Every structure is written in C-alpha cells, then in structure tokens.
Image (cartoon, rainbow, N blue to C red):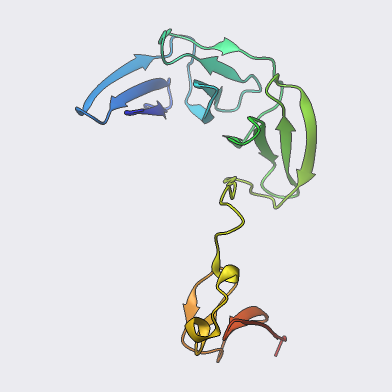
Length: 182
C-alpha cells in the first residue's frame, strides 16, 4: 500500500493514530477517545493495528479502514513491551520484562490463543524475523577466489584483520575460524 500508520503518544496525556499517504504526502490523525495516557506498543496485524496503552494489560485492535475513535479489546491480560507479527504464519510475538530479572516472548496464534513462550534477555525491545530464503547469505558463497583474503565477523561485517578481535567465530578465507579467549 501507499500508507504509513503511526501510533502517537502526543504529550503522554492521550494517544492518536495517524495515516500518512506517501503517494501525495497527506495525513489524517484520529484521536483515541478512551485513552488518557500514551501508547505503550503496537503492530500491524491482519490489516489492523494492535496497540496497548502504556502501563495497561489490555490489547486493542483498531481498524484503519473504519478509523473509529477507539479500538476493540481483543482479550489479553498482560503488559507487553514489544509486539510483532510473523508474516509467515500470522502469529503474534509479544515480549514482557521487568527490565531487571527476566524477559520472555509469548507466542499467540491468529485466534489469539497462547501457543508457547521462550526466555530471552531482560530488555526484549525488538523482535525481528529472518524471512530470507535459504539460498541467501554469505555462507552460500562457494567460490574460494571470491573469499580469498577476506575476514568477516558473525554479523557479516568485513574486517581488515583478526588482531584485537574478541573471542568468537569468524569467517576467514571462506572457512570458519574460532578465536579463543585471550
């Protein structure tokens, strides 16, 4: 589509949702009538915006086609830090944390039924899915000539040398090399 949607905190006394049409630069903002604080987290899911009010435990759904002044509660009872939809299976991944001792990701199917969870770091603020095909990536480069004289770290960054690098696995001339703790 040609629209970008933003969920806005305004001045932390309320929230709004803006629709920006990137084809012509026009925008339309809908003030959320039932919100008296800012938005905590949000994501686009099934063509609708899921959002949670800051500090609340309800999750709401807002329809950008109808553009109502409030969302509809969709039956969650937990405060989330981050929301994201897996476009492959349409599952909702929602993180929770106390920012000191735990962090975990809950997984919900397209009917909002809990299907699993896993622990992660204490600040799970970004969830990203690698949806590339298996034929993509540096490990699929087979020509030794291309990789000759090259060094990459595990993030895919090209390095000039291994000197001063921390413990870890590196790709040197196309081969995996482990650098032990010094």
